Length: 415
Image 1 (cartoon, rainbow, N blue to C red):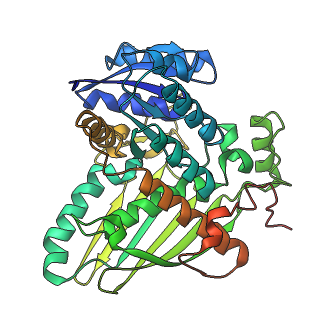
Image 2: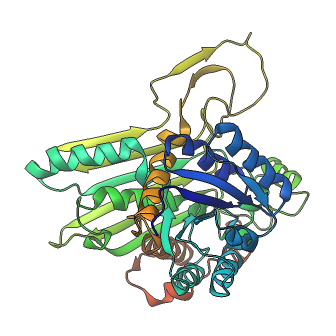
């Protein structure tokens, strides 16, 4: 029996879940009906936000199994922390295989796993219970990226040749939650946290419309990681204080800067290049997402800190610190850009609309766990390159079992 509206349950009630909930204002055929989190308080807060915005009569659940057992829940959005990824999917698979409930599909926030072995395990658990799978990489759904790709390929590439160089960057002043700074919990530092976006966004832009992502093949990757800011004593103290002394960046830092260069070949053997840069030590107005695309006779530029709305506040304007103008806002005075609808601009609305429509149609989403697994392989190759100080040729079987030194708590650029 087909259903007309999708009942959704969220696993995780934190920052990213709240972003998703806001975006569902622009998704018409779904209702957020449940939230389960590590603390009942965060689950109730996110459920209350969903009710307030009118996107579903959400309520808090104590366990994932309880949420699956509710017949009103048709699909799950996994937004729990990276370190809980395997136990989350094990509980989902166990609840379904033991007949506790039924689901159509599951969508998972990035990364799919902290390493290739975890990402493969998530994929296998999902397939074992016959679920449709969607990989929540919002930036490939960003309106400027989607529209930019359409125009570039329709006008520039069709007349003068395909694009051959993509540059993508994501930069801000550091994560919200203490566990993000902990290499063993998060799986790494800024490379694992944010380069996943840049790598997949660039891969999307260089893939010819209508062709699968596999139509371009990665052949090598070189990368560099460093800790430029947060290992300095005064900043290491901030991280230590925010984590109640659990995270010591003076001895066990994670990288706060990373870059990579990935070489691809297209179906005709033409060389394509992807350059990515990510940073937790960018101090500016706030979160900056940028993308550049180049071909024989054209170029494309996107920068989220160049919006259509800006304000200026003099020194006389005093107010509380916040993020009401732009995510990861670093100041409240001077010239300030305003991202008027972050959930829309960053791609969450279009992403969730696609996932919902795909699940309702019984169709696997275009952005799925195949993509999440490939991104994880590329990230692990980048870590391997940075650690070994050399270019890694692809494919490389060692990537399948590789755990970055930063995730093992053994990385320190100061020796």
